[in-house]
Length: 334
Image (cartoon, rainbow, N blue to C red):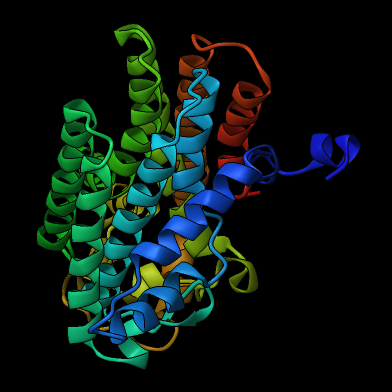
């Protein structure tokens, strides 16, 4: 990528270009560790998702923050692979829980194989992730990533218990998002500073960046589900509504609903009785109460928090790309 192309590229593409050698090493490590001599189903299922064209954003964050902080070893490769394995494992499990049929524009693993394979291969990837993180020899890194894995599971269970409950409020929503999405973002950025032996203040700033970026990312995804281009997102518009998920725009619309509207939400989300035309009416109600615009404002506010945290870190081209990434995450909703 030329210098001019690099300057005009999307932030994650710029990071990929700047960290190309690191990412090559991570991809090789991922392929090595997802192999199984005795269970060929494991690499089959894993490869279907890992090689489906995802942006590898989370491992990129680990590589970027490590390099930002001046790290020159190889443990950031192990940690980036760890983060990708944890992420992939959660996707495999999520698709089973949500009974999803499509992921990144392709049939899900549970659809191509079965639920048992998806769950067990997800478990295998979690185990591989723990093997990789212990290879660094850092108890602090092990604590951060194991805490993140526990928080992700907790967030998923909280989302399960809150699912279809139209009394779910924005406080609970934020707890869910911090668990299922932001926890891995913040762990990915935090460990980059830890292995570089940065100060507690710098490590905290990296955590705050990842946390805010993850929240902004999820809020933007909530919006893309309702107004995105399915050829770009790889999902059908309104999947969250059909799956009765309480995303932020829906929560805001329910909070502003009158009695008739609330009855609609109780029927479609609470009881799951959805008829032809209900998605269109849901979108109309969400827009009527300004829930899309309000969610976009909150997403941008979290992106601003991420950018503010990053200002405390060393000033170089990687920091600039990470700051631009926070803007890009929410720019997707335009």
